[in-house]
Amino acid sequence: MFSLGIWIILLSVPVSRLPQLVYETKKDLSDSGLHSTIVGHVGDGNFHALILFDPEREFKAASDAVHRLVYRAIALDGTCGYLVFVEKAEG
Image (cartoon, rainbow, N blue to C red; front, top):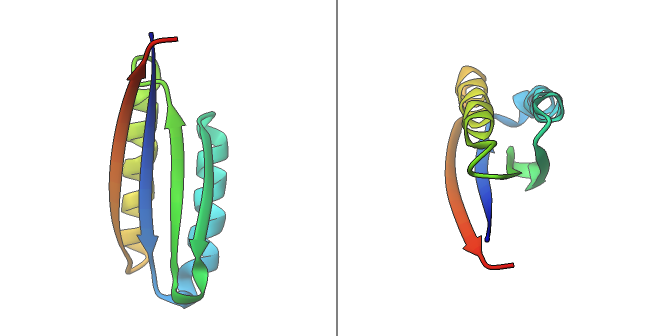
């Protein structure tokens, strides 16, 4: 059996703050060592960060990264939301 966690974070800031948030988010996620990417519709100041993680070994690292992203968006006058899924499968 294996488990896969997927954390999807919506980050939104004023468009003028978006370059800073994208740059810092990409660096933070790269430094975290987690499998991640960002995708978005950035013309309106929004994008999504997606983090894939092993819930048994990487939950704390993923949670810590999400908290940093959330606090960073808020500090840049933004908002955020997130979803987390954990899938367990035989295989």
